[in-house]
Image (tube, rainbow, N blue to C red):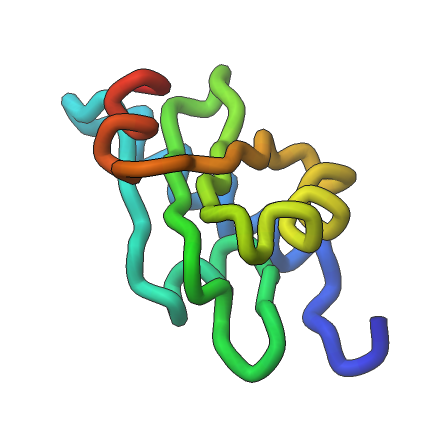
Length: 102
């Protein structure tokens, strides 16, 4: 995609975050800030940067999750799924969905 940062940049960013996460006594990292979600995933939706979802990152041996509502689920899945993200829709509370995954 023209103007898009290469996928290798996003992968390096994720690897750095996972390395820090592996060294801390944390179960997961939850990213809700739109700019940070765009920085880590490269996913943008329209003029907004990944507006509806949250990123849930666990250790390096675990998948990264992009949790989103129904409005941009299909777009998230088509863009992030091939990059190795587990894209899940949440219905109701994001907190409940995160709790089930951690």
